[in-house]
Amino acid sequence: MQSSAPGFPASSRGFLVAMTLFGSIGAPALLSADLKLSADHNETIQEGPESQENLATQEKATNSPSANPTATPSDDTKTASEPENSKPKTAQSSRGLPPQDIPGPPKTERQLAEERKARDAAKKRGEITFDDLKFDIEKGGEYKPEMITPAIKDLEKKTLKIRGFILPNSVFQTNGIKQFVLVRDNRECCFGPGAAIYDCVWVEMAAGKTAAFSTQVVTVKGKFAIDEETFKNTDGYAIFKMTADEVK
Image 1 (spheres, rainbow, N blue to C red):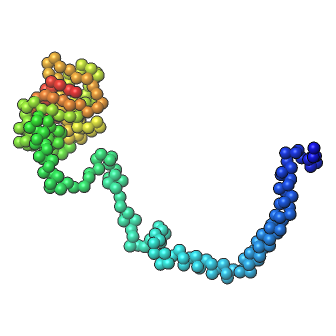
Image 2 (cartoon, rainbow, N blue to C red):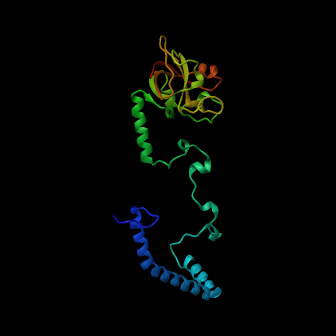
């Protein structure tokens, strides 16, 4: 059996052979590389400050907008003809509105006509939306009976369906509810001071009927009315009332 090199186990003999080859072959290569690095270093030293200034000038010319037409000017190179407010702003950033309140692009006459047609067809089926209850009054403004439009008056005493949310503050239990306020969305901005009076409907369940509270959209079916008593009883926050047979 052959003996290993002193101080190394037999398994390390391959490593020693590699190191031996490296000493005979790698050394000249390293020496050649060292000479090249030394020559490059000497060239850099010989160039001196003037050569480095020329390189800086060439780099500046290469990065200039005229030398690179596709380059985008930085904020530091903008001219006075590009004011800061020239950047497009979204409606949300400029108005501070939540996404659902940001108005979209204006609708065309054709789109408006199609919407009116669809709403008229829904009314004939006995289905209305809060948009059908709008009339000309400012939020928190004083209500006058003459503000009610003929189209809204035409809905009175009819059995209709309308979708909305049960206002949580208007109920005190989750089941067996006899009355509540139906609002157009689930934010508490559709009933009370500063709210639009047409964004809510006071709902009273018919005799023997009750409703269950839900955080989801519900459909209320009942007889619609423009009710002055409701207006008084809600301190002027609601004018529409429904006597409901069904809430689901």
